[in-house]
Image (tube, rainbow, N blue to C red; front, top):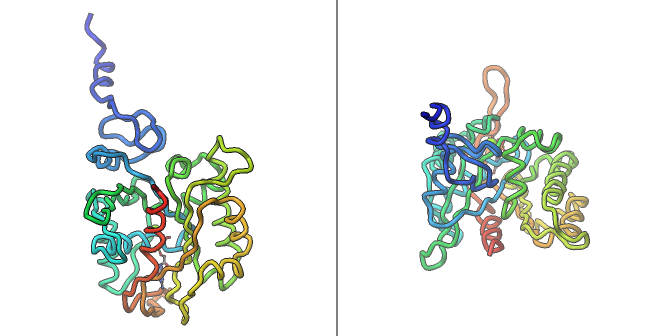
Length: 298
Ligand SMILES: Nc1nc2c(ncn2[C@@H]2O[C@H](COP(=O)(O)OP(=O)(O)O)[C@@H](O)[C@H]2O)c(=O)[nH]1
Ligand SMILES: [Mg+2]
């Protein structure tokens, strides 16, 4: 008796690979059925000799994730700040290119689409001191709305959940302008992220702290006249609950300030809509949190 055409089609498409993020079943040409990791990301991970480390860069919409990741790729590709990285996939390059093209026009990049399958992913080989491969890092440029909805209704965004559940490190971005203006919402969001990370890492004894390294980065620091020289002291004084949570629950935590613009201006369009434009590109504090994170990955 011949096999049903549907079954043979199923077997043909069935992939022998487990999803590198969640371990779920995958099919050729399709995103992971469990965590929706895009197929193109799986493909680039499979083309590499060693499994990558997932590092998540999270924060609410508008905090500066896309700008941070694009600039990080630019600096890594040039080996600025003592860390060199090679993009290992074309979509990594589009994240880099989008930022550079926008900055060349003295603009910030477009808002990240909410749909998971439209996110750009960074896949970068971080090179060791003598040009030897140290580690592959994979991270998506997520939409803040997706992070927010997963925090509010856990389990609704399976990609974010899988990333937080499996990540080797987390970079939490906090908007410095908003912290100085009103404080609370950015701090609460960061605290929610750390609580969620804690909740998704079962099996630890109650008394022990979470081992996953967490870097807290205050973004848009270039908009302030004076650069904050001691971000941890700033955190202690201005986001004291977040600072206390980090001390109490994280074994490895470090605070940073970042900024990409040397000077910015407010532009008002014909409809009266205001936007901030970068007049000069002068990245600071971009590689440092990442270099710290990589050093903690072991
Ligand atoms: N001055 C300054 N503004 C920034 C910086 N990073 C982001 N921004 C502003 O924040 C907006 C949102 O940044 P974006 O990276 O798209 O945020 P995302 O939603 O977290 O990806 C940008 O359009 C800029 O107006 C920075 O380093 N310096
Ligand atoms: Mg974005």
